[in-house]
Length: 299
Image (cartoon, rainbow, N blue to C red; front, side, top):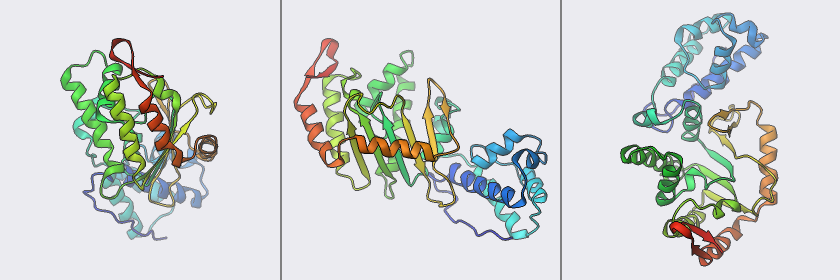
């Protein structure tokens, strides 16, 4: 059995780390399924079911020795196939552009960051704050300061630069598509001062003009969904959507995306059509009033 090579530039910043891992994981899973082995049976070759599961899901780098052991277990003798697996393993150990910020990134967020930065399509639902990829620098700075009250100015600046650099995935030369559904309750939370909120709303209006960005607004609390949700699609067709659920300082990455895809579709139906978003944002701008302590509110 021979596997075709999926080519991309090895030095590509956005593809480093995650796409090779996801492609390799998908191929390992197919190889195991074709061999007829259950995960626990195949894992005996590398000593840990948890390790094999992580390799198949693309959330950890793969050791070449483990790959050779699995290839032997699955009866893969073709030299070309083994070389492709080893090349993918080597690429999977590369660092992404975010390496200088690594000390600021929690371990549970790192798999999502890599997937996000290799994405073809990102769909998200936000109910607490404006999604990171849609935040104006002033709003982002205020939110980061609120979440990290003990951070010094250097750390705050680093966190802001990391967030703005992530936004290049939708603003760069070959941008991903972003479809964001935002609960309007977000706009009633006093995160930033009036000027910053004005710039944030205007920034969202500008983003609505981009052909790769879709923003829908959901009437505050009416959607009935209690937690944020993100679905990420990678360019490779044989890789399932990645589901990211952030929960109280941790994250869950469910394996089956179908339920959450239906959930996101239901949210889209309940939300205002995208072509109504700019006018609704303009209404918020016209009703923006200063509140106590310089924070803002919408009348």
